Image (tube, rainbow over all chains, first blue to last red; front, side, top):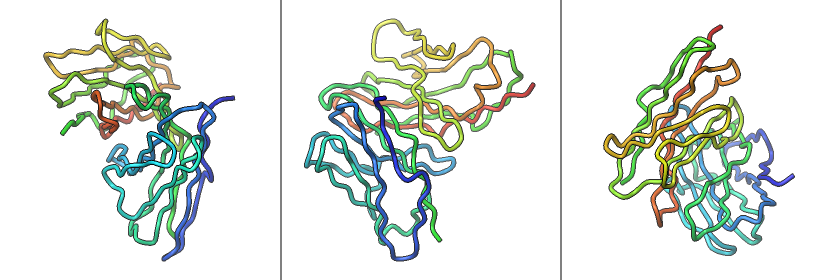
Length: 114
Length: 113
């Protein structure tokens, strides 16, 4: 089955700890995105990548980092600098970076702070 | 900056009744518009999209939406809701050359028997 997978489903972070959320797609999509979802606020863009080894900040990049070493993978690290990391994180991908097309979403990872 | 407004935070309808969820956008250029649905604890599923052409678009699960440029609206409709339609619905907009998909704050739909 083609699609976007995110792991883990739930993730717990201790104070001062960095944690990494996984996002993998086997759709051969060029572009990948990370969004943060908080209750009543919709989705906000953290980072996006249109091509391997390149990525851009979104609206709320502070306290987060990403890498795009492979086309199919776009992991997100929530660093200790992110003071309010509790949220639902959604990864998305789009087929063609040069065209305006639909973004498809993964099932999400819920991050909780211990 | 582009923005999307979903004025209804929560809507309750009876099973079998009709549904309309409102979405207004603010942007000067021609928008590309989407409706997504999210069940609790799940990712977003695309219901339908408008890029160009016929302003009435059909989607999955019996949903449709109409793009009205004069009103800057893209309202979602369904003639008869089912209990399985209970979820949160998000309207989103993007414009050409802009990678940022801007979402509304969502409308939570509750279905009563």
